[in-house]
Amino acid sequence: MTDTYARTASTWRNWAGNVTARPARVESPASVDELADVLRRASGDGLTVKPVGAGHSFTATAATDGVLIRPDLLTGIRDIDRTAMTVTVEAGTPLKRLNAALAREGLSLTNMGDIMEQTVAGATATGTHGTGRDSASISAQIRALELVTADGTVLRCSADEHPDVFAAARVGLGALGVVTAVTLAVEPVFLLTAREEPMTFDRVTADFDQLVTENEHFEFYWFPHTGNCNTKRNNRSAGPADPPGRVGGWIEDELLSNGIFQVACSVGRAVPGAIPSIARISSRALSARTYTDIPYKVFTSPRRVRFVEMEYALPREAAVGALRELRAMVERSPLRISFPVEVRTAPADDTALSTASGRESAYIAVHLYRGTPHHAYFTAVERIMTGYDGRPHWGKIHTRDSGYLAGAYPRFGEFTAVRDRLDPGRLFTNDYLRRVLGD
Image 1: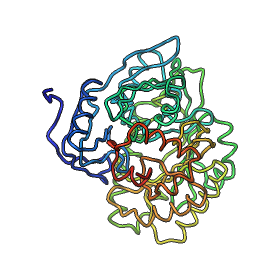
Image 2 (image 1 turned 135 degrees about the horizontal axis):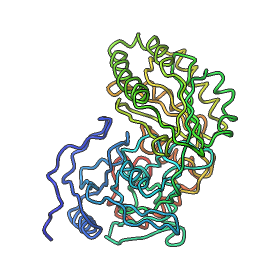
Image 3 (image 1 turned 180 degrees about the vertical axis):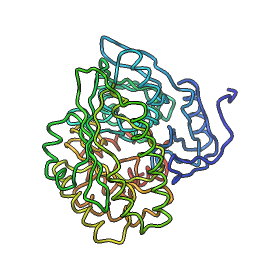
Image 4 (image 1 turned 90 degrees about the vertical axis):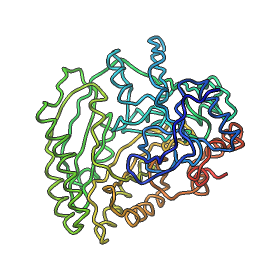
């Protein structure tokens, strides 16, 4: 077959710039048949294969020196089923395009993360999540998926068809095959009212359980070196829609949260001693506001300041203790932290390697501005999180290996058994998967 969908190899970098790879070749198949051919040829050439999405993972989950598969041509909606209330979408479709297309059809996902630059397959493969009392990650909203396995077989799986593969592949890490289509649950589009409000660290931690219980979606950001937080509560609304004003929204989301914050981070990186003072000013800059809009416009926000991130999922009851320990660690250390710490929640789900698998979870995420040395901070944070039986987000920086993770996930062996069956020759392996899954 003439290779019309291969590209000359070049250096690939993720969004944050902390991971690079130089694959032997890059391929952009336009169909499932072309993808199956790519896999067969890679296997014949003795090359490993990794699919990549938008590169928003901070780990090397997509890095390869073999064949890198770009999903640029595997995009678009295949089908909307208004009886089953599902949408089937090509795996390379960016979430921002899916959200806009669903809104035009009067439909919406139930929950989503706080950015929408990722592809559908990339977001689900790593367990991307938002925050929710009752509604879980994007992966938990999957009702079926299509997977091309190492030998080129096209496998369609759901709770009724190949249920063992379905339980694993919803958060598959790219280890089981290449996902080519995903069927997601949808519902009629609805309105959310967002209430953003400053709150002290002491109050938000004291009232954490109540705030989570009383709101459909609750999250907050704590600003290190201060006692200040910014909270966000999203709840369904009968309307009417009342989105942020154009000027006010631009001031909050672009000028303060991106433009001025970018300058503050740059100053802090150059002069770390200025960070506590900058943090005190930044934590007071965002004022309370309330607005009502369709879901993706409330859940998501622009993230133009580039950073690196570590995030751990803990049993929800451990969140406040871990956060207080994190604050104490920062206060007694010489660390200077310019980025706020993000806290979210999720209900338990039934996906084998979901960070919320089998337990109600709270997520604590720490960030540093790109180019800032992060090892000391992230090492100290990881030590705290693992002390609370934490599970690292699959797409964010961590040092855990298969020995630790096998103990953290009761269904870890179930996942690796599916992997052994679908990819015994490890066509889809790389250094990251060897570390976190074993070989």
